[in-house]
Figure 1 (spheres, helix red, strand yellow):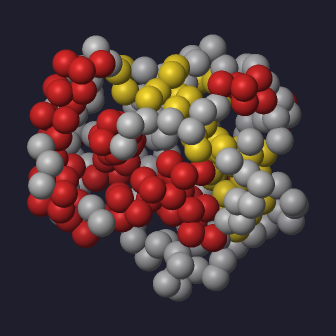
Figure 2: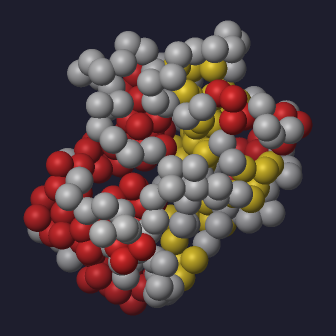
Length: 233
């Protein structure tokens, strides 16, 4: 299992105690146009920028930029499972302890929320519209039918997960087709984590939740609110 931590500003990580990360082997994924400042084997930089294999040209895709980069460019030979985490996490237990829990149809997540919570899918009409247009699928029906079949009414409201490499590659291809349709919605940076739940249901992946291993500080450095009414006119 390989762990990646996504950061858009290398100076940000210097504000956090590195012993949070010393529990496991990891590499940083640097997104954005910032040049590589601190040469280290623990950095993977997105270069060359703005070519056909890089989506930095699209604004505010946030962590998905790193997901895309890894799916398209990283050599995953001999690696079946990976963890991708945002920089503003605290790790409390060795993530290597979770490796025995990895399975081909399982996503290990670290926070959970009801699909009926107001912060879940109620304010993401743009995602619903895109999925309906591109895949001819009703998002609400997918969630409802999944609950009827499995009694699963939870999702993970962050992009911090341990997953099969196959899941990463499949989701990236699936979500990329939605991107041209979601840019018109100002809160589209929040669609990534919600789309993960829908893709998981449609493709037979199941979540388990381990909140005692990490917490997500959710510093929100991108300053992009979830609710459309929070945007300035």
